[in-house]
Length: 92
Image (cartoon, rainbow, N blue to C red; front, side, top):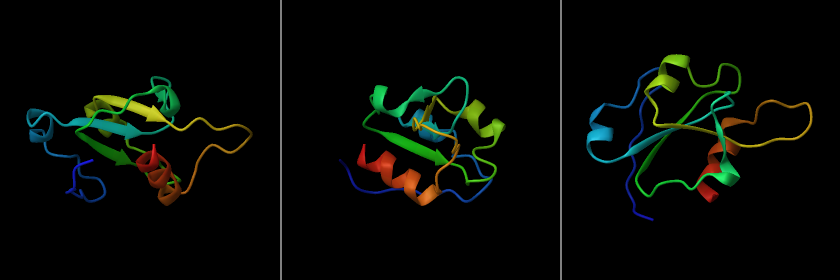
């Protein structure tokens, strides 16, 4: 896996040039259109969007993403701490 990353501040969408650079923008969010993380092959060049535990990823940001992926969970809980989510996704 290549090094280097970019951080975009809260409520700022990644620049459109990411897609022009061949980077796939993937939101990690529970949504009707989401693919399960364990069934999804993540692309090599990817930018992730993570929401917070309360509000998740904003709908406007979801609309700008190439793909929406969720971490399947069992039971009553509907969210994970964002740091735990990041760790699971990056390990995957």
